Length: 376
Image 1 (cartoon, helix red, strand yellow):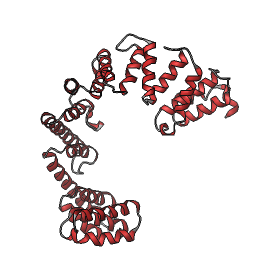
Image 2 (image 1 turned 60 degrees about the vertical axis):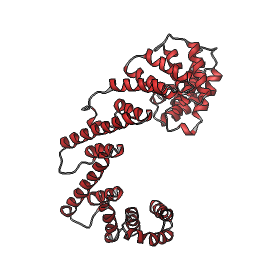
Image 3 (image 1 turned 180 degrees about the vertical axis):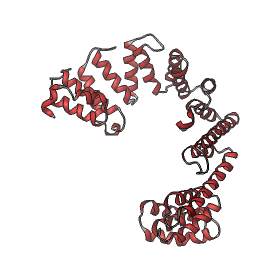
Image 4 (image 1 turned 90 degrees about the vertical axis):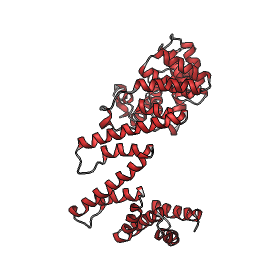
């Protein structure tokens, strides 16, 4: 059987296992890949293990034999299954019997990840860093686990440095991001790690100078705003905007609005917020609405402000972000205070209540207004 046919059967079994769907089609696929598994194909062995575990879990002998074969061939998914199975799932063995098995397979997983990390695989070093914090072997103390995690964080940085020295600007940016943001470092070790912001700053500067694209200048601007100076950040955002990188428009507008990194200029703030909105920036819609409501950089226009707030509040895709609840809160305020509309306490209450459902604290406080006592 060629690799294309195998991949087709693998996909059928995986989908059946994931969705508990079409067991007959999966059974036929299992029959088709069994010869490959018997000949040592680790992926086929792992999928057979998952199939038998999903549909015949009461008979552990049917899935464990395939999982162990795949794990012995260093299939990480199979090893992880065995780790979790013996540590948390297996109920037909006494704890003193399964505990050493769970530890055995966990150390096997560490061994396989170490081999990958030694070859420069970033994800393997990152997995080891997190493993020693969140899932360390039970014969290690918390302190030992933390020290091991810190060691693998350093190895992760080494790997990224090696790639940056030999690779592309993208590799250099990956290193800069890791130095600055920590590369998904668990909070349990974050405070123990050295501060590498200065190195990150130098790298971002190099990247901006080499790549000369808007995204690089924008990244430099964000870093400068936190670590160096607002003036440097503003200069980078302007370079990014000149190169057509639209996310910088909002940052420029906010700088003009608040006078951070440049002289306060409401007219320019309005102009840049408008550009950001025209390029699809939702957060800029809220700020542009604020400009219309305040008359900052434009004539006060409550109708335009309300239209923007309604657009944001009505966009269902934004419900999981804070944009929609902010817009709902602002609409509630406009109806409460009669800004461009007749005072309507019912509408104000409904908007505040909707915003409060989305955990908007200001809306929760607004609902305590005595004017709303008849609506509760």
